[in-house]
View 1 (cartoon, rainbow, N blue to C red):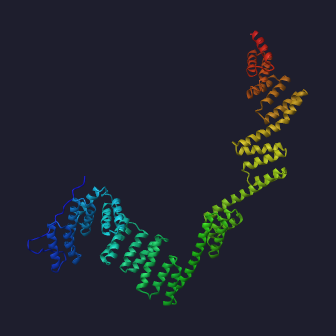
View 2 (cartoon, rainbow, N blue to C red):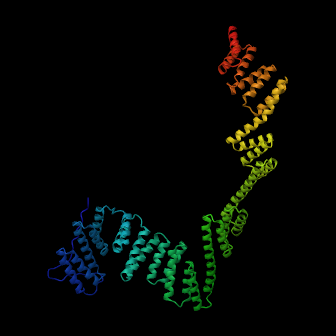
View 3 (tube, rainbow, N blue to C red):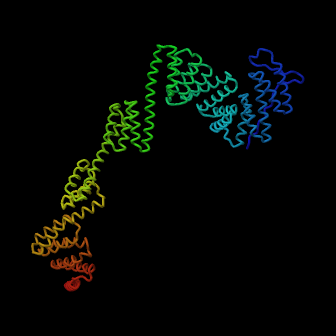
Length: 600
């Protein structure tokens, strides 16, 4: 609920038909009769609640004696009461204006301060929040309502738990504006400087130094103003506001003392920092006209020429960076070269041109550029890292070139030359599994299956989950195993059972999951009366492929039957029938099962 607006009674010492009398501390002369008349007029108007008339009368009195504390208090009271009057009539915007004017004329008017807070709260503003009051102040300042903005900033400052340098600067700015607007009153500029210095005490910043400098410059304290501008530049060397302020300070020094050479040198240095080389040169030359032997001016001109060269190099460098970002590496290199012609000892430029050469894969020139950067600046970490990356890229490029050449040779059936080229690539990068795989394909194409197998195996060891490598190794092993299997079959056909068994086992070392070879091995063992070995071979075949190798169950049955282990024999005959019910041994398996069951 809206707090009740407090009506501050206008307390004046009035006697009917008598002139008002008042006194001020330090007021030595008799009161100004016109001021007394206007005050009495204001009192009468107040009785009639003619607040605009009251404010006008007191305002005229204040224009005669601007520093009359008594009159300022009365003006403040009148504005507060008018604000209360307007509030009761819901003219809130104008009421806010009157309360702020009351505080402006008398900062000790606590009633007006309370009324302002209450009305703001009614309007939905967090009146007790410092940031909210700053935001109001910013808006009022943007609307050129500077006195009102001042009230809000001061209120925000009083609400802040700790003094905020930004608020102090805002208050200083308002006093500076009032100083400029109101005829350059010394009191206003001194207040501005005081607030700027308080901000500087809280936190040193380039902004605060510039503000203090500007205030001092307004008071013609040029030396101290320039000192603050210098400190601002030390804090932020590239801040344009600081550089411009420095020029401003030295311009004022020249204006006040145009025949002092050092002032022109100071201005020249300030312009030089701002990269205004043309005017800087003019000021150095002006200093030399005033003092032809001035060493500072001569040194300044020399330094200026160096700065010109650096600025020119910077322009080339900026253009180069733009081309570089657009992928126009040749154009970028052209601009970098121009920059290096101006400034050949700039390590950063050599590094940048190295990156452009590297981007276009001109590794030789890139390496030279990076090495030059390190020669000029041995601690340049960017150049060191770039060289490391460059070496990797050079290696990778060589490997790619050799690999591409090897593939071309292999596609043209020049397998031996392809193998040699793959080996050269591997010698550069022995950690690339694809190189070993490609070498394996070349060996396989040249019918060197053993070396093909060896390289497929190396590739798979490096990349264990690569399905292509896995399948290629499996196929090459099958291809190596095939002649052994054929040899074993031939030997078995000529009753060389020992030789057949040896070849089957060698084949299984290559293809350990081949069920047919295990079955064939089982038949050789069985024919050679090696029953236990035959049982193991048949069991493995049946385990790997029970449907395709169903005959293994039948022969297992016969072997267990020979061993008189009839129960297991019956189980294997049954497994045979389960997997091959229409198999060639189906009738015999059934008969043997029937017979064995009669023996129980």
